[in-house]
Length: 286
Image (cartoon, rainbow, N blue to C red; front, side, top):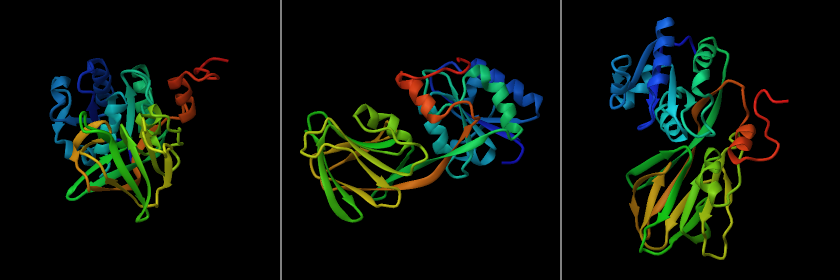
């Protein structure tokens, strides 16, 4: 990454970002750096940030800064895919796994990045394809039951062969990043973000086989809908409905996003803090 010439802002749709935007504007002016933001969001910056289309943002900037929670960070990561633009997460809500800093640390963090005192952590994504439709996610793709339509019935095909069938409230296909999200709430394991593969977890299963399955990133996965219509969600956003006989192909997108890390906490320290696990020591404690 060369010296920063432009930074793109990705804002939480509802949280008050004014103070953090002000910090960004002051820092950018002091270093003659341009700020850009998505057209529908920059009006909240009151003219201090230039407007640009979402599809063009990542290609115009050297760094994306997500102001919000993990949901905003996931959106910034998706925007950064074409150019693998590094993404810095600034946490404006509850502690997440992806955000690296809190607002008081922002100026120091930006200076460190501009002076190349940081690393990037690659995060794999996944693409779900059926027919002429596709969706990209960094946490998970979930097939969820439609109220009144019965259970979500899905047959897993691995490497072109049927492997196991699930009947459940939902079937979640997660990346290692997403192993701490929906899959975890359904009893799935925590997977290191350094791993590469697909974690399939049934939610409230009603089938004989009720365990999660982890596939390597190179193994082909297809999901065949064997029951009634189900909803398809990507990173928590409903993208459509599919019926019996539909096959959804899932592929891993290796290192699809680059998350900025400043070496202040590890993934496991963030997990300890998030889940209130014993043994967590906050920064500065002995």
